[in-house]
Image 1: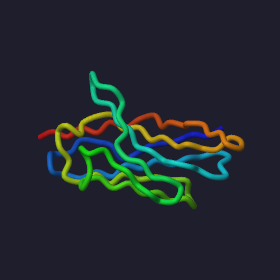
Image 2: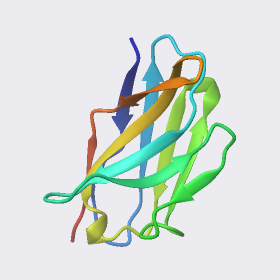
Image 3: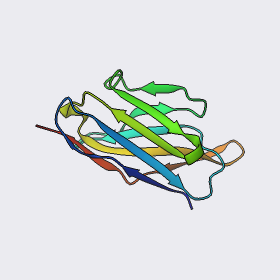
Length: 120
């Protein structure tokens, strides 16, 4: 059974920084794309950043230049460095790993979510 555990959320002032981590445990041979999503109160969950198995990255326009996604394949882990945080970044952040379960098929695993609050 694969489990994803997140850490690193908290309360930070505008302009501050946080680093989120997500680590997977269980029987894992490989991980395709890794993603960070977030969901603010009253809003739909949105994709914040994505990193492929080859290391290519994509970001939501709202976080480009401020957030950096990275991965550590040896430890089945992913990170999100968040700088210059704004109040509108306040949300619950979820990690998502797309893990192959058989040829041409993957399964989405999710973390439990970690709260990020940006407020003075």
